[in-house]
Picture (spheres, rainbow, N blue to C red):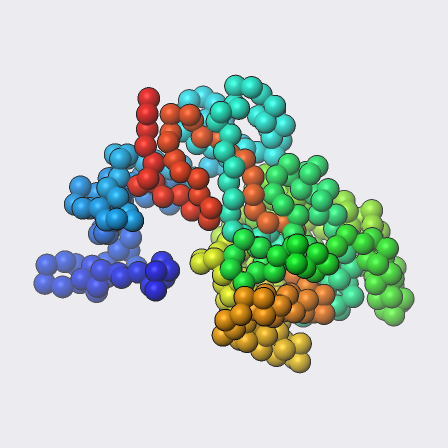
Amino acid sequence: MGLWVAHAQPKWLIEGDDCTDARGERWTETGFFQGYGPFTLKEWVHDYSISMVKNPFWPGTDTIPVAKIDEIQEPFLDSGPSLAEYEAGNLDSSGIPTGDMDRILNDPQYKDMIRQLVELGTEFLSFQTKLAPTDDVRVRLALSYAIDRDSLVKNVLKSNIPAPYYTNPGVAGAPKQDKYPNLGIKFDPAKAKQLLDEYLKEKGITADQLQLTLLYNTTDTNKKRAEALQAMWKENLGINVQLLNQERKVFYKQRVEGKENIYRSSWIQDYPDANNFLYEVFGPGAGYQDVVKWDSGDLYTKFVDLLKQAALEKDTNKRMELYAQAEQILLIDEAAISPLYWYSGPYLLQTYVKAPESITGYDHYERWDLQK
């Protein structure tokens, strides 16, 4: 019940009463918003920025103190423009673009500004399982086995942790790598080529005749990652995967329409448990069912049964084993997705900003302070 989707909402503002006009879905907009907490909304310019100010009526609690910062302005910037603003002295914190990672990490002036962000999330690819040629599990597995995740993280992204399986091991119930060293998908170009050759021979076509498209939303990092995957598939499988990028809102809509084979995908925990990664992402009625189009058959029934058992299991090791079995179905038997990496990487924070380390990736600004 502590999850944000269960937070109380102001009925008097949404539906209206004798003193307040009904605002409906507009209740979160500038000038209408009424909230309860250490900060409240000052201004929200969609797709541009948001500003929050200290709430003078928040009394503070044992776990949520009165804020020390009067106002927080957060521009919605990609990492490239964000870094430029940071280096110009206009931002107190910034991500680091892939292309600037080596320069920043090796420059002594940034040594005390570099912080490590750990987000309980996973970057992965979703396959449209009802659209040829990714309607064949051999093609999906071949694409997954042909990805060198270690090289992607080390040489292209310069951050993050290669993910052989989907559920971030930092959440409760997730299989741990030391207990399940062989779980998931590993880089195996020979196996990938064998699987694809079997498919091509059966269909009577050659690799250059295979038509596949990877769709991603437009950012510099997404572009670099997509180009790296495209090169790996070309080198290891001999296929030409087309790349298609869309603005974020259009991308989300087209991903559900299912007209392409491969989609850039991600998940960051709502609450830190494997149930939130598996059942609430790929279980009955979950959002990514609309992307992978996998919601029936014996494998899916077994997959869901394992997740239901795991949700009720109180023994930690047994629960972990159930989720490991579910991962095997998701990644190998059905190969509905291909995990790439777990989120982790450096960012910049000015030394005069005093902020506690976050172990979930969520910042609690009421605990931040400025000392300059």
